[in-house]
Length: 435
Image: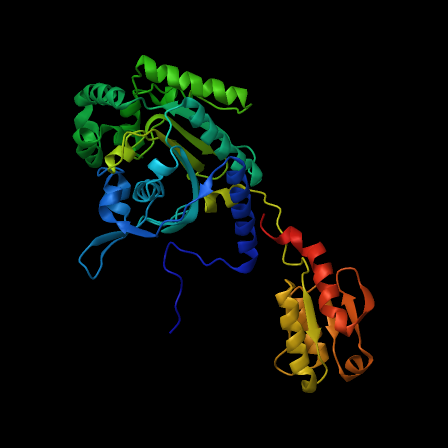
């Protein structure tokens, strides 16, 4: 019997992992440049934590992997990163010790949705959470970090959409106005949207049914084709001023954006600024990153009133859109120390171990294969150097080291092999190390 990876998951082999590692390295370097520190949370949490993202959202209703542990506690595999980061922020009293905490994360998320192009049941995200400020300048900082991370990954042609969903009071007024507009057409809505009407009317804005979509946005198909959607969000003066300042800050940073595309983020905790970054040509799942402000989540999870804003980007989607320059499978690294007879195996092992202790990628044959077979393996494994240690080399204290990348060969004193190769490897391998 053979097994396969579960539906909606993928195995990452060495060649693809090079691209992943390059992206993760660039994210860490950029986050550090902005003053953000990494925080890692468990991949499972108490189910109640994610009810805060909205009981009427698809994540909670349909997509959480839920299970009961031996203590009869209901746990879930984390479907998103923000709630877990805020839980850790409060649990470890970062609101007391750091004040304004700038945090970032990398890792897998899980949603039990129908797998399709661009959607997985186990997927990966990187994201940042800036917790401790209500300032629109922080909104702009987070958006700038998001845009810069995509540029560093080699994503071109990305479009930044920004909007404001207003404060909680604005959302209450906007929800009632939307219900009033939709009430005469309630019978025309799909069954799911009729159930959303009272619980969370904004979810109707995301419906894939064309009729529901047109009714929710109060537009005709002709207007929709022109992008002339009417925003459902009624903003107070303070929220309008906040959004204007965010736009002014982005202009100062030279970041191009589109504030005419109205949209709604799916999670209930968003207030004021929201944004998405889309890459045309990726198909239906063209949003590679998205985020916004969530000024009430910290308080709802038991903390003090705290402003916060963040974003998350999908690694799979970013890599699909990116042109990352990474070491290819033919990039040669390290030394293969071959031997013509088994009598030298112990000394080869000692030298290989000493090389590794000095940071050199070092490989050897442990199967007693022919020199020809060892050379083939050295080439297959992408080794840069190959050397042969036999009885003659040991007696003469000299060993020939061939550079397979440039085709040159030189002799090195055997008792200085480790020192010489460590120095040369550092000069060539440092660029392959993250950071």
